[in-house]
Image 1 (spheres, helix red, strand yellow):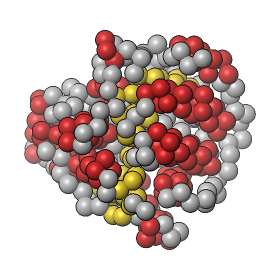
Image 2 (cartoon, rainbow, N blue to C red; image 1 turned 30 degrees about the vertical axis):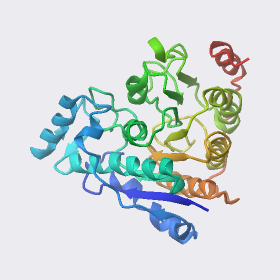
Image 3 (cartoon, rainbow, N blue to C red; image 1 turned 120 degrees about the vertical axis):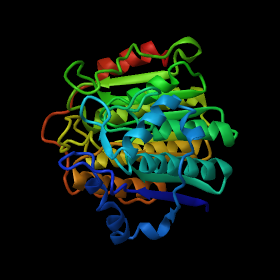
Image 4 (spheres, rainbow, N blue to C red; image 1 turned 90 degrees about the vertical axis):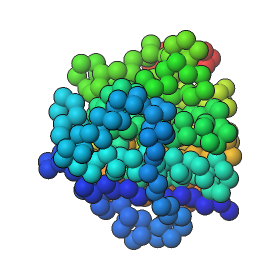
Length: 346
């Protein structure tokens, strides 16, 4: 049996006091994997640094140079206030993107079957020309282009289940028919970051139809997310026939996360991850890589990652010490029917 890869890039120095996206969210992950007997079944990889050439496949050179310059000057604020750099941030962000790209190389090269990248800074809000939402370089996008450049892969599917829309990933691939981008996210325009990801945003030019946005109301819960996977994402994936699946895995859709209100439980997250692993097993020889994005309730993140590792290893265990939310789940039947009609899935 081929390996399940694990990369761990906690970026300890890339931390701003009081900021929710800090190294502290990473500290319990490896000890939990070890304590629950999972770490021994994973193959730990040594992260590589993404080269400027790799970064510039998705980001303009001016953006790469700006992040390098701000870091060289000791750090500072990179956008309107929530995305920061410290003196080590440029190298650490290169390491995050490089770790994901190196894992993709092994997976498409056949020396590993799947993997989990526990890396930061996160990436899915980083666009081709600007940083945003705590993100410097778009780790998943860099890895997707790397797979196409050196791995002989053409069709890549990116699934984003972070509670925030992956605006950066969407912008990078919006005119591309070789990358199918699917984002499930809380959508409350003008009220919830980043405010993009409407159902009508479906791509442009040859990329028309290769962006699928699932704009969710608050308190969707486990049933709603499960329906989206089975009734929208699975049919779209079967039509697209990806050769590799990359997942922007944010654990901030949990009902206890302090930054959102999507209503998922840990069990719901685990079932969603299992469905995606099964999708990869069916469509692309199991080739799937989960890349950490958000997740700001530390216990949720710890058990979410533990359950995800079990899913990648095809273990039966699911741990959910927090249970389900107390609010009633929203019925998303009208949204499902609207999406099916819009994307010609029925």
